[in-house]
Image (tube, rainbow, N blue to C red):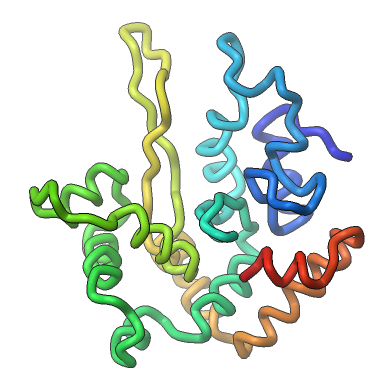
Length: 222
């Protein structure tokens, strides 16, 4: 098994494997959680996997989000094209709306991101709720848009103490995939039939994870 001891190790594995789940997922050895020594999780004197997420995104330009069963995954720029194409079933978001396939609240959230660029989760939630604290479903809608490949996490931001040292949990910043990856993504994402993208991903993962069954891999990518 490979060992992860730094953000650079996650960057290297994401680029090499194409897909790197953050949490254990039923396929042994295929997660940051399993490959990182326990002493690096929540250590007081060194950064660990939770703190590395933002630097990994910035260094690699990879997609990060809740892509596999609502759980977080790093996906390389190269493989996110096929992943998003498959999950979108060939529809850009406007086409999905035109066909009546996008729920109203999905459209609300997506259009806020599209109009405002990238936003911290708390900013996005405030704009979406318009001050209505009783409005429900924000996290589920945001996860759904990530699962479909329309939204990605672009960074994590931390509060800092008087010495400039970050502390607490990082706050996620989000953007549409088109904004994050730019014109090249828009031009290439629909170049294949969605089923062809699915086949490519499954073939790639089968070669990468020969100990995983076809059923496990199909369940993983959804």
